[in-house]
Image (cartoon, rainbow, N blue to C red; front, side, top):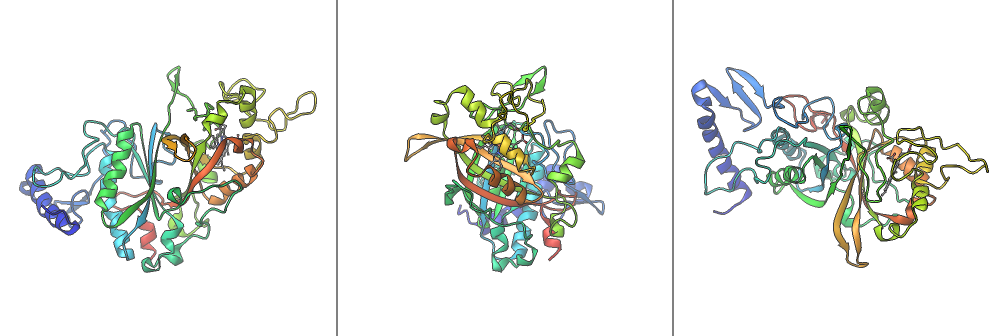
Length: 427
Ligand code: HEM
């Protein structure tokens, strides 16, 4: 069988509707599948029944809500981050794309396959299948749009581009590579299982065949030691606890201050959304591993094992960067990462993962590092910190920024609505 997009679509519709009625017995009960197809609206006894979060699913993060998942969601062990180019040529087609993705994301976050499987050996399975038998594994899926999307004339979105959504400026020591930079759309899939995260992106992209192409992607991981039954801050590949100083996700006040775009801050369609900055940062493990522990600790301004600020005992102890020793020297060095980050006075929410992707051909060194991801209500917050780190940050000796992206992540999705509706509704 030839597998053209059109052919696939036609067969899909014919088979799934008929088979779904048969499988669910919906025909007999007088339930009709709505025009939006599977996973969209089911017409039951004259009422619209929307696909919903399954509250009985295990290890489940909700899809619907005030904000998208994957931002204030507790950090999972794995990420699969994908940056896409769009191939569609009109805003109506783009809108259809997000509508089509919505039920697929709901299904996968419920720990289900992307739709009812028809038993027809002559067709490729609807779902690629590698997440079968696994539950939702706390899968979160976050969708965002990049500045380049608004610059495509044929999409007619230019008047809706928020002024703050623009490529990040060039920073000192940046060595960005085109193959890890930019993109029209991002999908951040995080889960407590690498295969579940990968499956989510794979199935979304597969379903959008001919409408998007992959620009770049990066898998990442985190590991959480558990002490007294409590998950601890994960360590990055330099072995330092990473994510200690962050907004308190359970505090609406803090999140509104740092992360969630407030009414009047931006274009109305971004209210309740957030900006994602991603940086693919190589860590020069070989150099680090030759560095004395004291020097490593002075680089970050924290103790490696406990995660405590230098001169303190516990990870949660306050970082007082003004403190000096008896000789009048700062205890937390002035060129340390945290000293400089704190001095910027800007705040962001970091949600990073480590990566390991083979070796860098030209040098034979590990291609490993940090998929640095931060959320903020304005990318300017990130820029302010990165500028402050500038050339001074001692950490610069051990890292190289190789990839970059900035994306406007839509606000949360209401039941019955679809991803990005606010953007299309204002057209
Ligand atoms: C590979 C690169 C990086 C590594 C390995 C790294 C690692 C760390 C570590 C270990 C800490 C201390 C523990 C914590 O509070 O989480 C920290 C703090 C911090 N980092 Fe980074 N970081 C990197 C890049 C960045 C970048 C690019 C930014 C933003 C432009 C940034 C912003 C911050 C902030 C805001 C803090 C908290 C400072 C405070 O105590 O107030 N980091 N980072």
